[in-house]
View 1: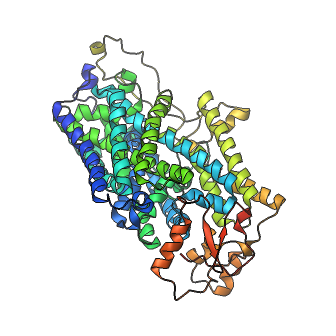
View 2: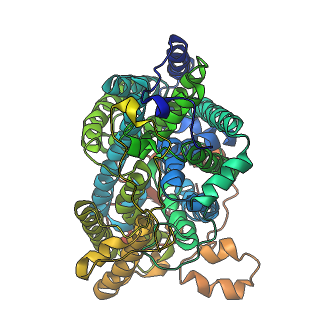
Length: 632
């Protein structure tokens, strides 16, 4: 189809009807009412575990929907179709990458956090590598979450402002206030159930615009053919060059590692994953994300395909209606549904539902970290840090507004630069028992410095070797904008869309590495540097480590190997050597878990021969007075 029915012919975009605002307002009201409901319902349950972990009593389904919401933010809804429109469908492979993510999160990281009975991943950092590493990790995490929440808040507001006339900072402020309200009042339960409602809206909105787009074009098959002729359908790209923007290797492996840092070690995700009754339910919640994530990514990619076919001969960015590809989805929605009052409001709800769920989860995680520092027991005071950091995210949103990178790439760079080193630290701690506190501290510091150098260098120099397929404006009505059509230039290229056009030399070649590899680089750097430093400063005596700090990888993934084979593969860590105490009751375990939590003391205690021994940042918590009781 060479031309569409609305804005890119006339040069104007439609505005929202009152019915659209009503639909949007209803969505915000529902989210706010969920927070109010749980504030009233649980008013007599003013405990930290109830507020931050929903009393560890949630069903896996809402937990799975909430976990999915961190992936399906406005970044995915706006960024994925734009990625397909501008580049190709190679990003779809991220749905396969989640298999790696689920394996790592469900079977390596989450069980360790759960079995330790801790509420914060940073408690593990101190228990394994000491106080200095915990402080470094906390600073990195707070920076990551503040920037991430700012992107999730600002990007959809900018996109919708450009094509609907909705006030930019008015929408930013409205979403912030609603998130602050229901997160502060309702705690984790409100976050989980609000996320569930919002994800339902997301699926409904994406299906609506996909179906309507296919109707206008005459079917998905026609849209697919148009996109294929213009180089947007690329699926089997197996080039191993690390500079290629997207290939099967870097999306599946690099993307899998990146999202493992989100689902496996990010406080916002871990906090929700451990809000269920046992480890098995945590695993179920994570694996339930796989079909949901694959579905929404497939939907988003198909939306990108149909959207490109719709604008095949008149690119709205080149035409001047919008300034960024991230604004394509709202523009396309107005072109498709502008006459169907209420439906554009559904998309507005879809985009901001993704933002609401992500920001509320981020605020809840930041709150947990702050409470761990200040050790407050008063649940009413929880409102104050939520309000403070919710307001701070507005300031960070202004910083994000000055960045011109596509939002999908910007988020991946951010998570890679700051989340990759955090994942590397936990990987070093759980899978390499020989690592000591010096290795953990120096490893994560080195990794952050290296990735910040690469990330900032790439952004400042605008280094890119990616070859974009062409766009066209031959069907645009330039007279409607009082403009002259641009001179027709030969846009043919000799390289395929996923090849590289490398004109860089020396240090700048380092900046050409695909952003999707950043997390992998971060993990490898922490592990390599951490182990080298540990060898130099003296490796840990693994026989003296608390076995709950180490993941028994071979016992988990190769349980049918003979014990005589698996024992040496534990490398001296005494997994499974503690005998079960038959007198141990659920109540006693709860008492021990309560003693671990940080609201009374930031450094938890363990029970050794009936005596309490305080953790004060000693090297790897390597005690010399076994046997000890670590059962929770």
